[in-house]
Length: 464
Length: 106
Image 1: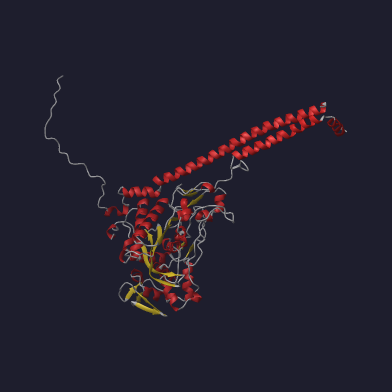
Image 2: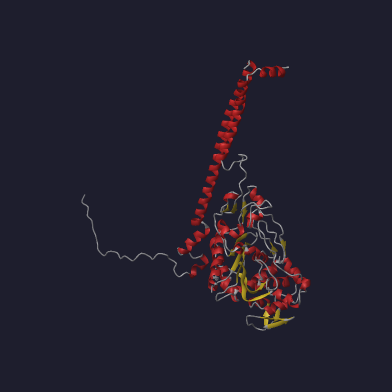
């Protein structure tokens, strides 16, 4: 009824009034639309909602040093190239929804997108020392690349992980050679050479294949299958196990490895983490390469015992050496402060771990690794110089070597395990004792200074 | 225009005015908050820039370089350092060989 009355009344309106009414109805709407249009043109980045989205999380060190901050469009890396290979960088959204493109930024992208702060175990001071000393060695020896990994004994915390060449993640778009951004410390697989020998010795001692006081008859050469292996250093014909390590005798190591069947040696190396996934939270790692023992030819076992025909990453080798530092317990490396304690297991007895450590002290003090001596503290370690296998050519390259050093200090109360390698030196020297051991010494010296470790009596006298 | 039409028109216009007022107010708040968010973002960017600049002069690599340039030697290498003192000691100045006596009369 009311509607009909309204219709009748409306029909009474004159045409002019109808137009006026229509104008009054439509004009405000048009004005409103125009107003919104103008407002929108003034605000280029029109927010869909005023509620702020979570900002991308920070990446910081335990001491509060900020390695990455800012939202995805304004992401910054205040420390520049310090720890760049670990931190990585982020960029445009990827098809899988990630913004992180490398390193922690990639591996923990979901956590960072949710606004969570990621705390890494890196010590910025030690990281700076490791990077600077590695850079110095690579440049001085005209080498191509290198890596350093430093792991805290007892916790597995990665204190430093340096790779060379370096880059600045703030300018990653302008990096000419993209291989510069590779985190070589975690991803580059290298044949460890003689630094591998203590692992085989430890396995042989633990399994009872050799006795600690056993004497071996060691010639200067030995032929296994179609390959002849030689010792670089001249030595007496009868060597103890400690002497075999001290002289880095390939022949002696091959004789020790012959006490194992292929499957036994394979299993022991697997227990040390060689060829195994590291399950490191916060970064990608490679597992190294240990060919299946069923495919080994006669000389393969001999080659593996001297650290050839097998490859590891620097992180992997440092983790394996940590077993000696941790009195026989494998503590998986940790990059995140809140990483769960998983995978801790005993590999060898404390007695064997200490015996190997003691032999490695002899290698440093009386063998060919005196360049690694850190005045004031006992150092246990082993040098290595390995041929480089070119996977594209399928053969070892003449004149290209990996010079490495793996060690522990202080050897009597281990605090740190460190692995250093420098590849393809074109300078005067390429041996591990010349290109890698000095880096170990320099970084170790500053770590000792940083921690204020008390020097031990008599140790200064052993400085070369 | 009939009475009904006039009433409806007035009600409609009143509502439009209220709506326009509320809309204007709302847009004002909206723009203000948007501006605050922009300011916050700008300040955060400035903070990040300043952190980067601070790291260039007081970050771990910069401090180490400065220390080495200033003659720092890591403790374990200290005993091998030839020059332990950065500055030379002051020159020897002998005592003046004369006697000065002051007498005060009271």
